Length: 143
Ligand SMILES: [Zn+2]
Image (cartoon, rainbow, N blue to C red; front, top):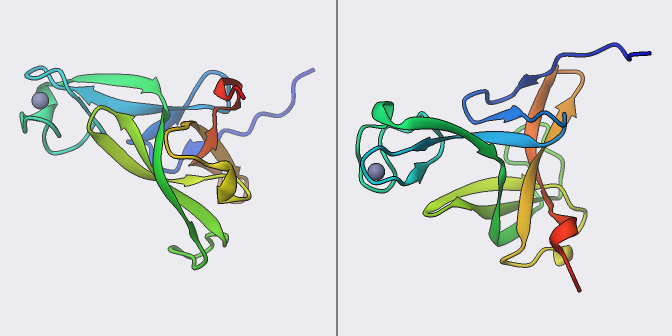
C-alpha cells in the first residue's frame, strides 16, 4: 500500500533541499578551499570569511539547523500571502553565517536566544513547492 506520491519542488533549490526523512531540510553550503570557512548560500559570489572565489570551494549538503540569535513577531505580511502574525528570527547556521528565517511557532514566548532550531519543509500543495520553516529542536530541550 503506497500513497500517491506528490513530487514537491524546493521553493529555493539553490538554498535547500528535502532530506531523506521527507520533512527536514538540508542546506547547500560551500566550504572555502582557502580558509576552510562555510558560506551560505553555496552560490554566494565569494567566501563570506576571506573573499576567495567560491567556485573553487567544496559544495556541502548539511542538515539545516542553527542557533536562534533573536526573533521578532511580524504583524504585517512582508510578501503577499504571508500569514500574520508570523515570527522571523536571525539564525546562526554556521560560524559567521547568519540567515533570517520564519519560525513556525504560535507564540514567540516559547523561543529563547541560544536555542537550537531545525529547518523543516512546509508543503504548499496548491503550488507544488515546499518552503523553509524553522522549528525548535524539542528533543534537545531539557528542563
Ligand atoms: Zn575563505
